[in-house]
Image 1 (tube, helix red, strand yellow):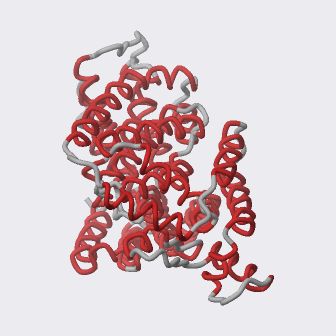
Image 2 (cartoon, helix red, strand yellow):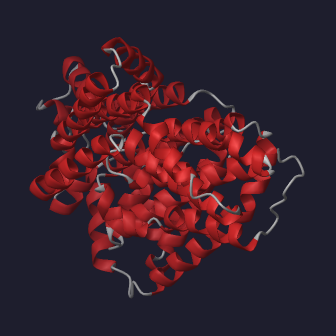
Image 3 (cartoon, one colour):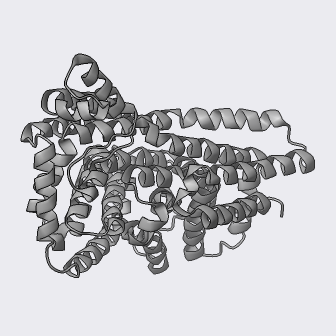
Length: 471
C-alpha cells in the first residue's frame, strides 16, 4: 500500500537524524526528514494517482494559514520568557519557591499548580511558558531532575487544558464530534480524574524517594539571585494581572504580548543594571536601557550571578530561540498537508477500521488513530479534526453516543501530542522548558496513562451507553 511509504520514509529519516544529531536534531535534521517525507508523498501522488501539484499547494496554504496564529504565539512566548526572567519575575518565584516548597512535595505541588493554572486559563502552552518555567527553576534549585520536573509540569498543564471549558482543544473536540461542551467535559471526568489521581500518587512516591533537602544548593541559589536581581514581591503584579486577563478570557496572543510588555516596564524600573549588562554597556543611559530591553525581547541573554549553574538557569533565548521550532512546525505542517491532500491519511485509517468488531476495538482503534495522526500530521488540532471526521459516522452506525468519540479523541490526540518530538506541542514545550521531548517523555505520566485509561474504561463498559439507532 503506497500510503505507508511516506510515513516509513519519515520514520527512517527521523531515526537516522536522531542517531546522528541527538538532542540537536530539531536544529535542522528533523526539518529535512519531514520535507523528504513530503517529497515522497507528493511524488507518488503525482505519478501514480495523477494528483496535480495545485491540490497540494492549496492544502499547504490552508494548513499554514491555520497555524499562523500559533507561530505568532510562539514568538510571544519567547518574548515573554526573556522579559519575565530579566525583569526578576521568574527569579522572585525561584527565590521564594525554593524556601517554601520541600523537595519531597515539589513534584506533586508542581503538577497541581500547573493543573489549576491551566484549568483557569484553558491553555497548557501559556501555563508551561509562565509558571512552568518558574517551577522548573525551583526544581533545579532543589536538586530535582529536570526530566521529572518537566514531566510533572506537563502532566498538570495538560490535565487543566483538557478539562477547561476555555481550552481550544476541548472546544474543538466537542464541536467536531457534535457534542455539547459541558457534556463532553463531564464525560471526560470518568477517565481523566482517575488518571490524574494515579499521576499524583506516582509523583508523591517519587518525591519521597528524593531524600534530604539540598540546603547548600538552595542557599547558593537564594544568595546568587538576591545579589544579582532586585528581588521584590512587586514583580508578581505582572503574573497577577496576567491571571486576570486569562480569567477574563482575553485571547492568548494578547495575554502573552501584554504580559511581556508589562514585564519590560518592570525591568526598566527594578532591573536597569541587568538591562545594561544585557546591552553590554558599562553605565546606564537611555540608549543602553533601550538596547537591553530590545535584546531581552528578541535575543539571547546571559546574566552573571557568580554561579555557573545559576547563570545557565537565568539565561534566556527570546524570540530568536523560537525560530528553530517555528521552522520545524512549518515543515511538519507541509508534510501533514501533503498527506491530507493525497488522501493517504484516509487510506491508512481505512485499514484500521477493518478491525473494528466491538466497543473495545472501536475505542482502541480511535486511540491508535489519534496517536498515529499526531505522528503523521504533526499537529494536535489536525489530529482532533481528522479523528472526528473518520469515526463520527462509524460511532453513529454502531449506536454509540458522540460523547464517547469526543472523550476518546481527547484521551488520545490532545494529550499525546506533547510526547512527539516533531509535533507542534512536543517541539514547543521542549523549546520553552529547554528539556528534550524524549527526555521528559517517560515522566509525563498523565499523558502516558490517559490513552490506556480510555481503553480500560471501554473494556469495562463503565458509563458507556449504546443507543438503538444502528442502521
